[in-house]
Length: 227
Image 1 (tube, rainbow, N blue to C red):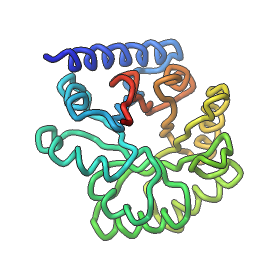
Image 2: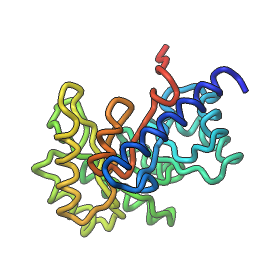
Image 3: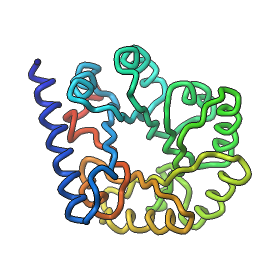
Image 4: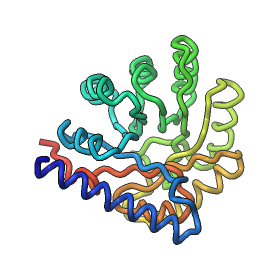
């Protein structure tokens, strides 16, 4: 085992232990929380190290990057579950429906309509999450909290999308707990059980507030190299 593989395996074990401890503290079953390992701009060797350590649920931010990485890996690991956790352009919907098992960033009517059409065409039903812009940040994707109820209803009733939950990315400077609590309340109003919230810096808080999916990248793989 290479140094990188040893490091990734140790990091993965550490994150899993912290998820379990946070769940136990909140009197939750750790099995209710799915750890999504985020492979964004990570070398394939590090992703392979996580696969070798038993990790099977992964997240990617970009369709194109995932296309270059996952088809070959899936031949060796057919039980992988792949989530798109970055913004999705409508011209990439066809490729996304081919490649992913879940789309966590449904955030506008045009995208909802295109996803519904493409899933029907391909005969695939992907789990869909609606991204809520809980911090109402101009630069961030997601539906504004005030528009969330109408958009969720429209996705389900008008487009027939399989909406299983909500996702958010809190503002960096805010207490994430406030945003996680808001997401939980919106989900509760609509009978949605899926809560994708929490990243490397705050996933333990997210678990304590009901996260069913946490999206962890650097805490598993190390710092990203954008060079």
